[in-house]
Length: 221
Image 1 (cartoon, rainbow, N blue to C red):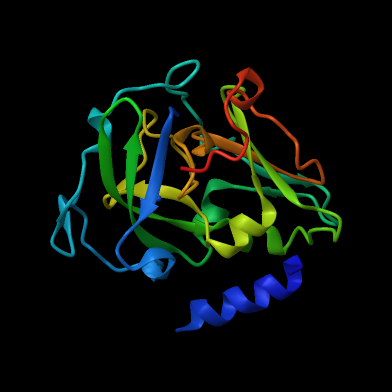
Image 2 (image 1 turned 120 degrees about the vertical axis):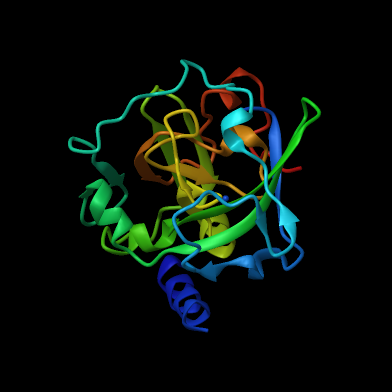
């Protein structure tokens, strides 16, 4: 399936969430994607009867500590195998169609965390860039120099989110502000925080920070 046909399928559906961890969707699987609901101005602790984790209390496993990103200067760059390079401001990204997913993050360190993630679809971000036919991989680059990758087809098929909120609270620096990749069903080292660049690539063997140090590039649970 190419990127254009995948976009058509995804739009049809739309019309009707850094360590050795992995994530799983809620009981509805990938059908857990929902248009954003107004949940009020407060941080929520429960959603659909399920208790949510305070992500601010989780251990920081980043490579250089929380990054401080100035939204006035911030630009999300989308480049590589595209016909139209993009530089999107924080406000421009938030102005796109937004969705929620209830996901659980399970860590090999022995803890798990459940959250309601709110954000935009990565595929929606790619539309204006016009991805070239030979592309098969997305490389995600963070403000601290961290990187990881996912197959393009996987990002499209799973409706992967770029989150700006967890549990109805805007991401803090600790939790990845302004945006965190929610690489569901993948080990946690695929969940890139402080995202600042999406590189569209044909290098399916690209190995990010931990993958180049021996971690499995597939990161399947």
